[in-house]
Image (cartoon, rainbow, N blue to C red; front, side):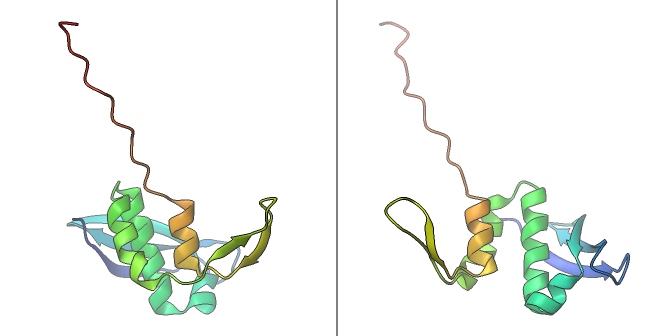
Length: 116
């Protein structure tokens, strides 16, 4: 299981027009994550750090660990009508992130008996 630890943020620009850069330690390796500075105002520092750590885990191929990080915080649901149109979306950003980056399990291939 990979772990992500927020290290620091390097503000590239204090405007909403540019990405800022955060450094995250993922199992001893430093990973750069670009993010919009406005996320801090929108979600607060703790949720922004959680997002940055989830993104670092995703970037390093540790999607299952990113899911484990976010699952305790998920809330809300997406409701569709009979035609598949959205009638209500109360999902928080964590649930939306999990929906946007699902863990896809490859179907197993049945073993073939070489003697048949």
